Image (cartoon, rainbow, N blue to C red; front, side, top):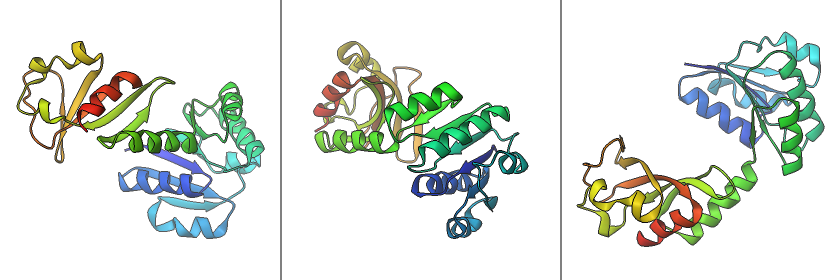
Length: 217
């Protein structure tokens, strides 16, 4: 299991803490707000009340050997920039930072963030995609025009193998896996026959993925 730290315990940060902890990882939760820290004491390895915009305080927390640090400081753009700089100076190899705008994200990337998260933008895209195509179960944008999606297998696909369907050739999308109940079947061959209720995990351009989504209703 990994060792992580989350700085900023708003809705986004708290969700990251709870998810990591539920998966068995060691996670340190940090925030200036006493109530937020107390709320996460039982769902984190350690919950600490601290101001991470103070470089010495951040250094004293001993998170320099964490596998990754997630920074989620809400609308405090200056604070997230400072903390990202300090984490880079501490030698953190993976720094994931929540950005509040595209420009904010660009600055964070330039100063050392290894991954930028735009939760509001990505959530909006997910909602819009879900409203347009109810067959899409999950949606993860990978680039401006490409995504990974989980889509219910169209009725016409059921009973046929991936080889028979030639999905990549017909739709220019790649089948990564098949979700069947609680099981995930990697699409390493073409002999897997689709069953009712199967969900296809696909990667490709949004326009091509939409074609498959419309087939599924």
